[in-house]
Every structure is written in structure tokens, then in C-alpha cells.
Image 1 (cartoon, one colour):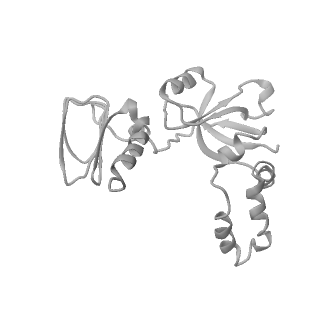
Image 2: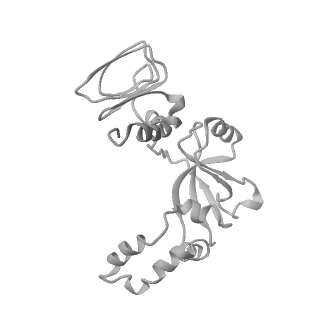
Image 3: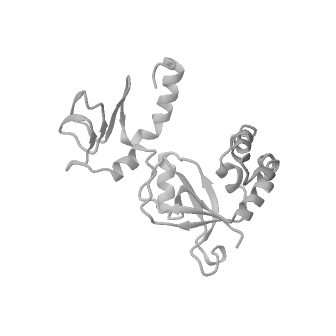
Length: 225
């Protein structure tokens, strides 16, 4: 079947750090004899309220960004949905499999617009299916996912650093090992230090970290990374 297939991870919690895939779990939208379901919508990283609605509905999976397709099917999709990108690479077909291939690809990429496969093709194509895949996947791009896969103490704290804790639970603490850090009375916080920046943020508000980073760059300049 000429399908564009993506893997969807059954969500274990409402997480604002992942994209979500809504799929149609009924016979007309299921490829016969498979567990492949027609994708209805893709949603980029939602706010917490929307993420909770997605998880509660049972109709959504995490978007793992993992794809499976035949070469001819994805090439056809590029020509239809991202024709400008396809044309750039079509110019170098004669270079494929030759010593000039790498140099051509390096040059061709500089002429392609910056667009993800999700935006460029997957959200537009009508032959996109998802395979629900409970494979223990986690994208460690969020603090919450790091907490899920890390070893915690009896109070649920995940610690990386020289840290002494008092009356503290369900926290993620990552600080330089050469600095002694004493934490008292925190419940559900992220405490992280990198270079010359210290972050103290509620775990439930971690989706705002990207806003904090943007504010720092705008107000404090490039001296803080």
C-alpha cells in the first residue's frame, strides 16, 4: 500500500513537550489486516490544558517523529507537496552513487528552504497512517521525560550533582558537581544550573522554559546561554 507511515506512542501523561497525532480508530479508516490507522490531525506541542484533553480522549498518540515508507512513495510526495525541494535534488540525479554525490548534497541543502517533513508533507498528504507503538520510547527533550526515565530517591527526586535535600519531593535537580547545593521545602520543582545561569521553575510550568530563554536572549544578551 502506498502509505506514509509514522509511529505513534500511547501517551502516559499530558506532556506539553511533544506533538500529538489524532487518529481514526474505526474499520473504514484502518488498513485491512493491519493495526495501521488513518491520521486525522497533527498538533504541535499544545498547552497543558489541551494536552490533558488529548490524553483523556484516547484518540491521540505522541508524535515520535519516526517514519516508515517506500522510497518511491516519499519521492512522489516530495514532488507533489515540496516540488521546489524535489527539483533541487532532481538536478543531481546523475551524481548519486558517484564520488560527486556528497559534494552535490552539501550544496543542494543550502538551496532548500527550512521546513520540516511534518509541515511540508505529513500534515498535507491524504495517505498518512499511524501505527500505535508501545515501545518504551521517550524523547529526552523535556524535563518531565527525563524524570520518567531516571532513577529517583524514595521522595521522587531525581538528582545530578552534589546536593543535600531536606523536606523536598518530586524535584529534578541538576547542578555542577563542584558546587554544594542545599535544598529545603521544595515540592515539584526543577532546579538546574548551566554555566552562569540558574533556573528554578515548577515542573508543571516547564513548557514556559522556552519563553524564559527567549526573554533572557532579548533582555540580557548573548552572555547568558
